[in-house]
Length: 119
Image (cartoon, rainbow, N blue to C red):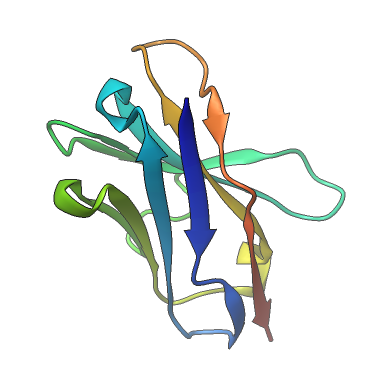
């Protein structure tokens, strides 16, 4: 089991920045990849970014490339999402998740943190 706790969400004006954190505990050594996802009201959950726990290889959704940066601190078992140049369309609940096996689904999820960007 892996437990995930997100923090760092809040209300920010368009053009502003926020940094989300995801602290992992439990069997974290079994994590292959960590990802951030988001879900806006009335929309399906979508992929935002991911990072390989060992190699730091990253992937981003086209909608956030150049604005968001995912990173990790292995010593703290924490993954971060630095979000810059925020837009109202970035408003959503943001979730972090763990993928334990390459190509498999993300099978552990946090409770989510709300990000609201005002225009």
